[in-house]
Image (cartoon, rainbow, N blue to C red; front, side, top):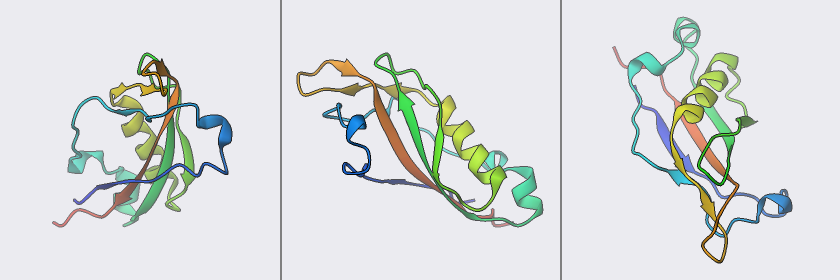
Length: 116
């Protein structure tokens, strides 16, 4: 299975209130996906797609939720994307002075059916 993370820039005009961070949150650890991460329903229905999510991270690095910005068209893939990104650990965003602040982690996950 090939799951790909793509870094997407935050649209500053669309969300000026989210731009208080000079540097956005980053993953605190490397991560990888395995075939078991692919939702059973999406496998059964042979669904693939891309889900873009916004994960708010507080100034201590704790995940505050997950919002689907662009759906894959599959509720199970969208839900799995939020589940995966909500379980990861993050280093918090920092403002221009280097202080930790709340920020938003935005990623796109591409779901491709495993090759069997």
